[in-house]
View 1 (cartoon, helix red, strand yellow):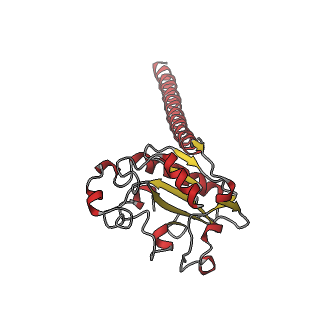
View 2: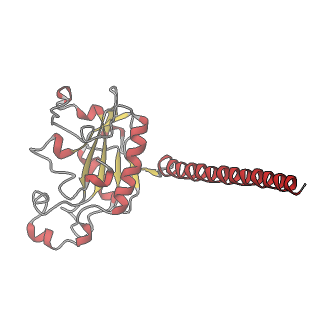
Length: 233
């Protein structure tokens, strides 16, 4: 009789242990799934809710786009020639673009704020003459196939020699030189949304390029101080 009770007790303990282990397993997997979903949700929020402030240039600074978007071109801009000690006022850059009839789709200031200057369904005037060996049909036509992104930044002394003298460069606030963490963060988010919306814009250095790669004889931006590794290329 005692053996029978012991056998029953062991069976009950065994079943209970199995149930406990099953509950723990399900709970662990559920927590992992929730954590994974939370991470995915946060990633989606980071990229889908990119804040962009409209600061649109006049329509004469662009034209209707009739070709598919396949490239992104990065640039640097500043008003260091006129205001070496206050080179990053967005209003000044806007006025320069408007006056000279040039444009880009986006401008990212030093704090990471993204300004939309031209709608993406319009062709901005940012690339000019140039060529890409892998895309011979784009010679002098990259405006038609690209999104232009300007970052407020100042390059190396050599890169800025056509804009300011060496003496002026040496007086610049060191914090003006190069790019900020906030700019890299905003640029990453903006590029993510562009890649999602345009399948032809591949996530590589053949489709996300600098102005200096398209027109090396006349342009040197975004320059040696731009860290391509910070945007994953």
